[in-house]
Amino acid sequence: MTYTCIKITIEDGIGLIILDRPDALNALSDTLMHELSNAINTFDSNPDISVLIITGNDKAFAAGADIKGMVDKTYIDAYSSDFIGSHWHCVSNCRKPVIAAVSGYAFGGGCELAMMCDIIIASETAQFGQPEIKLGIIPGAGGTQRLVRAIGKSKAMEMILTGRIMKADEAERAGLVSRIVSSENLLLEAKHIAKKIAKLSTPSILMAKTAVNTAFETTLNQGIKNERGIFLSLFATEDQKEGMKAFVEKRPPKWKNK
Ligand code: CAA
Image (tube, helix red, strand yellow):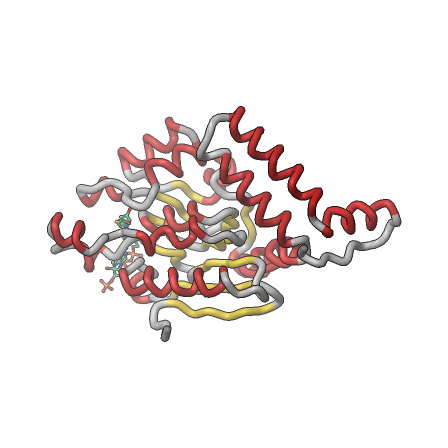
């Protein structure tokens, strides 16, 4: 697939995706989302890639779904074309860890896209919001669900009902982002985290991601049972033997990813 709205590179086991519609503040057009979905699926199935990063530019991660592409849509257009459909779930369906590196606006679908990622790193200029209410709609790519889980009902409700924007420092305090770094260091820091993950044993990384995500899907009791099952299953891997032996022998482990 030729990409016109995103750029991709691969470096040191990291698949980097740059959203690239600067004139539209990276508005998430259907074309962009199809390209993103294709890139994510390609990276997910590439054994040389362990971690993905999605980023935008200094001004915008993404200012939401493309309003110009939506303005004239009727219900039946939206329904028939599976608008905000399966291709929007590409990030949540990715088995490998995905890091969002956010500078500038992450509004509407842009905030939802960041929340689909596993870790959000923000620069001090990042702003998050679900301003759909000001357009006469509501968030349509998971915002009403993921924002509540990320920052709690009261803050999420206020943001979704009023369209209030949350700056980076508040987003960090509220637990939406894992840390704030300077704009110049944003990608560097995201790559640093990605490299740390990429150096570890792949089966345990994939299973850890699954176990954490289960926390959003089930009861505490069920989640703990699920975690135990995954934990025990890792004793069947060569990397568990190697990781623990290496600790005992006071040397770095040599992962086989088996
Ligand atoms: N869709 C389409 N185009 C967009 C866009 C969007 N979401 N956001 C910005 N743009 C375009 C603008 O139309 C403008 O294009 P032109 O130069 O051709 O007019 C260009 O990007 C620059 O935007 P502004 O001139 O508005 O830039 P600004 O710095 O003055 O303002 C902003 C920035 C506050 C982010 C403002 O652009 C804005 O409010 N954008 C819309 C944000 C929004 O409502 N997002 C939610 C979309 S709905 C959604 O996402 C549904 C869902 O849940 C999936």
